[in-house]
Amino acid sequence: MSQRLIICLHGVGSDGRDLAPFGELLARALPDTASESPNASQPFGHGPGYQWFSLDGVTERDRALRVERARGDFDRIVGGLIESHGLASRLDQVALIGFSQGSIMALDAVASGRWPVGAVVAFAGRLATPEPLAPALATPLLLVHGEADPVIPAIESQRAAERLGGLGVEVESHRLPGVAHTITQQGVQLASDFLAGRFAQRLA
Image (tube, rainbow, N blue to C red; front, side, top):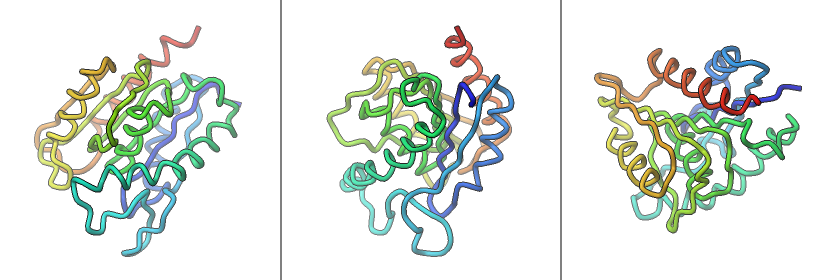
């Protein structure tokens, strides 16, 4: 059984297969690390794929409520994977990697204090956790966002960094010029370096 686990969380209308190769690539760069890339809990509803919560009619006001309602399914799926790898008592050896809505849920897991994992990497996300925030202060965050993202503006990652950083969370943030709503090779390298550094601190 592996000593560390990376869990990749896809965006709306996608499925676990989308980020599985990315997770496997990151895992291979780390010693004794496994990866999982589960489907989100709900069918997309507008074609194939899955989602943690619907975007139909979503507003700034009710997005946080939708995130809150999705927590039960999220905790069940993520918690089951962590348990299956024997890491329920070693959350510092678990990393959550999110893209888009997956990043929203990964950030919520930490910002709410429910999942004090070893690291979170959030690509093209936003902080949509309902107040009051009670973040897991020992969990470092890497936020990566393309400056040309037409889906979730890069300012959202900046706001997340400022909000969580202001509460004492360690946050590393990168805005990538000319990059749209995607994960680039540069983003992959940033994530790989970040995880290698954070997990290396815990190998002892």
